[in-house]
Amino acid sequence: MRAVLFSSVFLAFSFISSAQVKQGAQPPITPRQIASSLKMVLQADEQKALHDKVVHLFGLQNLTQGRAGAKVDGTTVAWAIIDPKPARVVQQDGSLIGEMTSLGDDGLQVLVVPMPNFSEFGYRIESEGMPRLAGAAHVEYFDYTADSMPQKGVLQGKLEKFEWKTSKIFPDTVRDVTVYLPAGFAPGEETCLMVWQDGSRHVDPNGAMRASIVFDNLIHQKEMPRTVGVFIDPGRKASQKHGDKAANRSFEYDSLGDAYVRFLIDEILPEVEKRYQTKFRQQPEAWAIAGGSSGGICSFTAAWERPDKFHKVLCWVGTFVDIRGGNNYPYLVRVTERKPIRVYFLDGENDLDNKFGNWPLANKMMAASLKYMNYDYRIDWTQCFHGSKGMSASLPEALRWLWRDVR
Image (tube, rainbow, N blue to C red):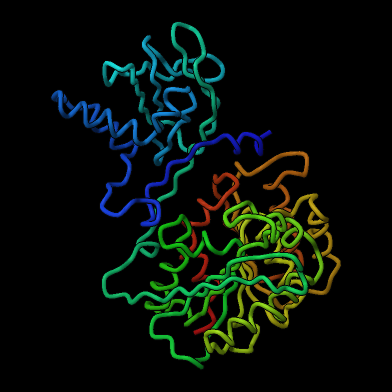
């Protein structure tokens, strides 16, 4: 099952936040940098330096215990192992990916090869025909545009953060809320609003989505209005540690009904207004909501239940399948009077297919229903897998489309 496969995938990120790198330390070497080094004739000291960087990337304990999973950088995949015997990497069907290259007397060996984009495959590392390590690799790469990069002369918005743990609608939960205030924000300024689910990782300027950077650039270009972003994490139970997988996420996000949108309107947004002296424009055209996967159906549900508040929906790889009733939406859309909401969808042929349903089919059914009912909608179809990489690259264009009539 692909959902199980994803849990064993090891991904390497090209952008390392300052919190992940100790002060003064160099970021880890990337698979593409390893590949470039292997093409050169290395002196002894250069090979030793490369050896040490590879060990740092994969982890000495992982290497010695045969637990060092593949590292993916764009479409370049790297494997490493410490073994006294020559090793090679093969696919699950036994076909050879490549022979590993020795990097030192301690048995460190590495293989770095380009693999087809939008592919996932099982692999194993073998030594003298015996398997030493097995895993799965997932290759998915999209190019960012300049709008997802910091630009010279563009002022940066401010990120503020608070913890919310007194919810009456979702009792016994704790969550972080990050608020984006556009550059030059003045207390009491009237702005548009955009709420994001799974907020912390999407607003992180060093993350995949980089929503705060895209906001900076598009607001500067006047291609979206001055907007306060409210980036909300799903609720974790009070007994959970910070950073644990939020136990309340599916209940909050996948459930149909108005509980979550009431949580926004009655609890979170008044708190944001009070803390930061924000003032949201009251026309529903000035309110947008965004999320992916379960956060995507959550965003649609919020606008569906309260179109008098949220007019705009940004949804990618939406979970419109048989989890808490989301599979009913394509039919509900067809038999319910059209609501004044605008919907942007993004999905891909490589999205999930499991016991709950087929995500690509479910999103196509949603798009067909919106078309049938003459909604203002758009669906962008990619080769993305389940996750946020496809949306990350498409975010600037999606926001331009979503906000095209509001300045």
